Image 1 (cartoon, rainbow, N blue to C red):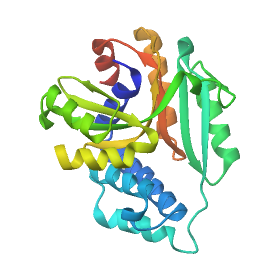
Image 2: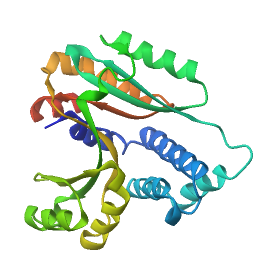
Image 3: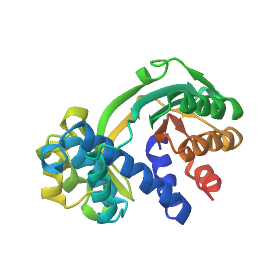
Length: 248
């Protein structure tokens, strides 16, 4: 399975721990604040905010936390976050994309560079690896949403481009610009999704063994644990057995 989705699953399990859940809530709240500040504070009038709120709800962020994040965007003391994308290579040449929101570019760049260096990778120029990924919308439903044919039919009706179904879940892909409309149409047909957001989907994946995977996971964890980092994507691929072993 491609690294982008499997890694998300590992991070989701990790997010059940209290400390990690608090950090996740903070990152989701930051995205809500930035989305509300850049556009309208009404989710119905702001597609980015609507998706941010939906993602927060799917991760069990309390309503009062979501509302505080929106209210914060309208206050004069709201931080001015800058969105930055870093690109680099991890162990075995695995391509890594790091998306950050920061109020201190120098601090974030220094931290990200240090993580790559510590775990056998190197930071590269913007654009060095992103051409190996497609920027798309991804809407995830549990397997209980329906069988593969039912979900595929709903996806086609909603204007999606592709569906990947497994024993655990359905991932529906669409053009990045269509994510808000597609996710809304899917919600009407299949109910509320587990997740609906923009992702970097690898065009190809790099196989890694257990030894390389162990170092790679340390790099990805260090990046993900940084308060300034919102999302981490890598184009690695490893067996389910090795993935589960490293996740334990």
